[in-house]
Amino acid sequence: MFHVKTRIFALILVTLFLAPVAFAQTAPGEPDPEKVRVRIGPLYLNPTLALTNAGVDTNVFNEPDQQSPKRDFTMTVTPATDLWLRFGPTWLSGNIKEDLVYYQKYASERSANDSYKGNWLIPLNRLTVNALVEYLNTRDRPGFEIDARSQRNELAYGGTVEIRALSKTLIGAKGTRRLVNFDKDAAFLDSDLHYELNRVMSTGALTVRHELTPLTSLTVEVGRDLDRFDFSSARDANSTHVTAGVKFDQFAVIKGTATFGYRDFEPLSPGLPNYKGSIANADLSYTALGLTKFTIQLVRDVQYSYFVNQPYYLLTGIGGSVAQKIFGPFELVGRVGAQRLEYRTRAGLPMDITDRTDHGRSYGGGLGYHMGRSIRIGLNVDELYRNSPVAVRQYRDLRFGTSITYGY
Image 1 (spheres, one colour):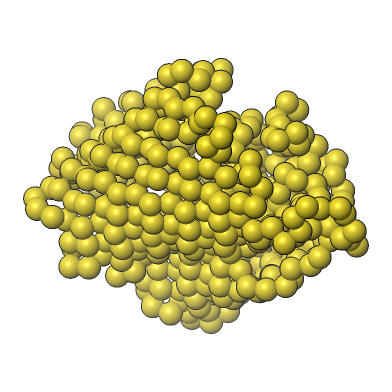
Image 2 (cartoon, rainbow, N blue to C red):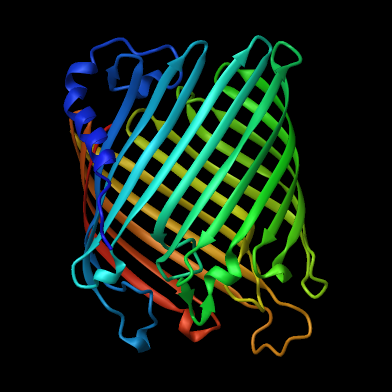
């Protein structure tokens, strides 16, 4: 199965060709005016096109060494566009993206993965309403743990309401609902992913946001999460989270968001231990003297596992990269990452490994060449490892190839 959504390609290709003409026109005052490359009447677009992972994957299925890992040539083509549309005093914004994944030998791993996001921002004097919807239809690995490229779709919808209580302080409420549905044939290591992981996740929270500067805001959030599984009710859980976060504008010296907090995760099944502890999520970047760019990503939170006897794990992951301009349009890039998966086991079960912890490592780097403002060509090498007390869960993988990106 390897189809192409012609409507998406038509939109991306048309806007790419129009970009040199439309880019000279005046961008709107909001939102994200620096990203706008194309204007078609009231519609603003930021189209991008990327060729990534064009090279050799030495372990297509993440197999351990004793199973003779399979290698193949692979590449991914990703057309995408951000879009904004003024609708009276409100803004409609969104993103359309498709990953076209190709494997030369193993046709079973080919896929076309669709992603759609939409927001409707409604400013009403001191009150602001933001409605959102997201849809994902993909056949890719769902995370660090499951190695099978399993077909699934996700639908999320919700919104936020904020009222300006003080000149720089806003009080709000938000709610989201996410439906995760694996295909009926989706399986991994004898586990039926459709049965084990189909679920509905509902979240409600109260927020206080303070605009510290025009480019920096602080947010405190208290929320309640309800996870309900369609078929495997022994996985159902409630949790309460308290977080504090900071958000930096795209024009700030440091860019991105960082959130730290505490989660009280309470499985409804009496034989499954709780988790009470820290959580975090961060994605930050900083450019020094216009020559060196540092990025860091951090995640720590509860994730659901495919294995019914160890139905969830605590994921702690950190990664970062450094991009250094060396001369002219050339840059060197280095990357490193680490993950730890700490599993929780149901009480009273005869398990060979109860205190199981898996570790992942990744190292990589490359050379980049910038052609003007919009095009970057890269040569990349990355090596990935996973160590586990379960022998069939260990693997190592070397990937090398090239990438080409066009767009902002």
